[in-house]
Length: 372
Image (cartoon, rainbow, N blue to C red; front, top):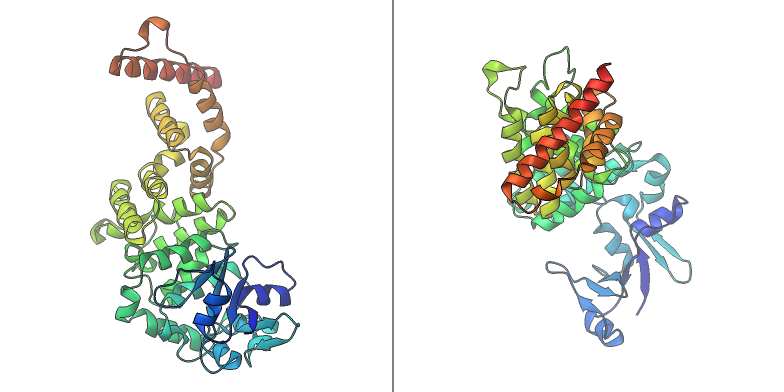
């Protein structure tokens, strides 16, 4: 039985980068592999994938390693390295690595597994300077239009999204899905967003999709903030055409849209709630300096309770182009320092009302000292 290091780990080695994940393939019979590795645990459903020592193992497809490479997703991932150092590669792999091209490994690669459409978009975000082969985009568009794409397990689409949120140019994930007509049904809230103005020209020069992509890219390096950027303007795609380019009330529409998107993808509960929070409160964040003390207090408390203070204010700054976090940091410090008098403690709702009033007073005093 022969073992091969395959895919992205080999690609990264050839590019001079430390491998992030190591996946393996093996020749021979699956039963023989299991007998030789009794601790291996099968985790794949549609394909045979085994987990052993925290790493994935799959049997080679086809008659051998050369045929297996033609069944992989992209040429630059169609690589296999033996322990002896012998390298097996797709006929176009080295040229595409040299020229920085993302190309399907075969004419049937996308059709074989429509989740590869989202994988292609994620690789485009991970390698933002690489070009996408036009024929591959066409194949991805065909695969995205199939029923199989709509019936993918949510966790597979969500996994690619999560990885895209960690990339150097996360907005490119959405750009590629839009090019491939692959936003619907998984990201249906953004379908058509490229044709909707983000707002009046005095404030926005992009479409809703273009603005979302831009803000996501500004926040690269902070995955939670990038997710909030994806969600913050979802409500704008539901704006009635006769009031465009204005988007009155898009915050509340965005809450429902962010929840629907999160549930469809199977996002963790915390991420779902923070996406909804971003949709509901991002406009207040951008107008922070002009808010009344009570509104500022409620905003700061909501974001703090969600454990999203830094990510939210990064979003607000990236969205509005203003420097907002220093004042928000100081205001949060000020209200958290407020303590209820002993005789008010333990009085339930009344105590909460009193605490909020004291916090608003603290912000009022701060506003007065700033104005002086």
